Length: 602
Figure (cartoon, rainbow, N blue to C red):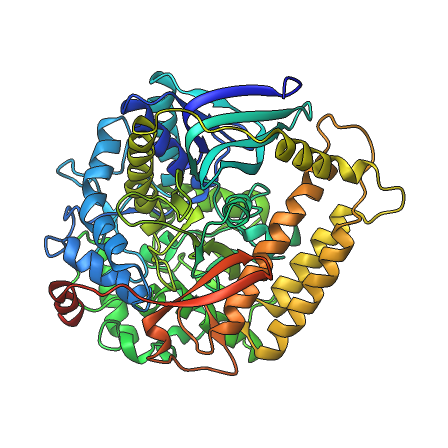
C-alpha cells in the first residue's frame, strides 16, 4: 500500500455539485474532518445547468401555498410512487434551506417589497420557484462554494473515484485516480457520501455534461447497495434541436413559466389536446383562459384562472412533443416551436431570461425576442438512484450515504421542475449531518484490503496492455445509440430485450477495450473506465423497464399504455447478485392517514 498516495478523513463526499457541497458544509460544521472529491474542477458542477429556480413553499407571491400543497404536487407529479417520507421532509424543510442560502449570500430576484420572487413551473399549483433570472443553479453553486471554502474543507479536484472499499459490511474508504497524472489515490474514511449526479451520458441526446457517467450509481451497486426506481428516466421536453453541435442543450422550463407557448408546424397549441385525465380541471381548457393567466402573471397578480397546459409535468409534455413530431407536425429540424416573443416584450425577455437569450443568439443565431425556438425532448434527469433511508440518507450499506441525483425515491416516477435544487439542499444537509454523526459514533477507520486495491488498479490499467482492442469512443457512441433508440421515451418489450442483447455484446467488446498513449491526462483511458459504469447502469435501467409492465411518469411502455393500480403499489429494487443484475419488487411504505387525506384534497 505504500506506493499509493493515501488520505484519511472522517467523512468523504464524492461529487462537488449542490448536494455534495451542502453535505460537505454540514459534515464539516458538525465537527467531522471532511474532504470533497470532484471529478472535474470545483465549480464545474451540473447544478449550474439548473436554470429555472429552486422550489419551496415560501408564499411570497401566492399566500395560498404551503408545504402541504407542495407535498401533494410532488406526489401527484411522481404518480404517487414517491417515498412519501422523503417528499414530506422535502416540502417541509425546503423553505428553511432556501432562506439559509439567502443568508449565506445568494442574490435572488425580488418582489417589489423586497422578498424573494417566485415563478410558475410545470406541475406546481402556485408560483413556487425562487430564482436568479435563468441562472439559479450558478448562483447556488457560487454561494455554496464560498461557504464551503471559507469553512476550511479539503478539496481534491480532477480526481475520479472508481471503487468503494469495505471492511466487512461497512465502507472503509474508496480508490480513485488523479486525472492529470494518472496516479492512484486511496481515501480512508469512516463514512462516504455519494453525490456524483446522474447517468445522462448513456443516451445520445442529453442535456448532461461529460461527468454524468453513472459513477455513484454503479459504485454503490457494486458495493452491495440497493438501487430503486431505475426505470424512471426524465426526458426534459425542451432541449435545443439545432444546430447539431448543441443538440440536447437545456432550455429552461422558466420560458414556459414566464408565458411561453408550444406550437406545432401548423401554429397550433397542441398541449390543449394532451391533458391527462388525472390533471383535468387543473389546467386551462381554452386559449382565452390560458391567455388571461399569462396577463395576470405579467401584471404580477395572483393568478385566479387555471394554468396553461404548457405547464403540465415534464413526462406529459415530452410525450406530447414526440407525438407531434411523429405525426409530421414538427419543426424543420425534428422538434416543435417554443414561442415567448409573442407573449413578452424584448426588454422583459432579456431581463427574465438572459441566459436563454444569449444561448440562442450565440449558438443558433436565433433572436428569441422576435423568433420562436426549436425544441425537443432531451435526456435530463434520473429519478431512480441509490436507495436511502428518508431521514438519514444512508444506503443499505453501512456508512455509505447518498444525496442529490445519485439518490432515488424522492421523486417517484417523475420529478417536478425546481424540486431538484431544493432536494439537493434538503437531503444534502441531511446526508452530511448523519454521515458526520455516523463517523463520530464509529471508533476507528476500517481496514483496507491491499489485495482488493491491487486487483482494481490492475483492472483499470488493462486497456493499456491490449494489443488489438476496441476504441472506447466507438463503443460509447454505440451504447448511446442503443439506449436512445431502444430505451428512450417510449419502450416496448421487443426493444428492451433487444437492448439487453446489444448491451451484452458491448460488454464483451469493452472487456477488450484498448487505449494508446501514456497514463497522464488520457481522456480515452478515462472513458474506457467509465464504460463499465455506464454499461452496468444501462442494464439496470433496461431490466427495471422490462419488469414494469405499465406506463407511469418517465416510463412509457407502448405495449402497456395504461397505468396499473397494482404496479402503483410497488417499487422496483435493483441489486447486483451472484447471478448478475437482478430486479426485485417491494411494496411502497404505508403512508399515514393524515397524508393520504392531503392527497385527496384540492
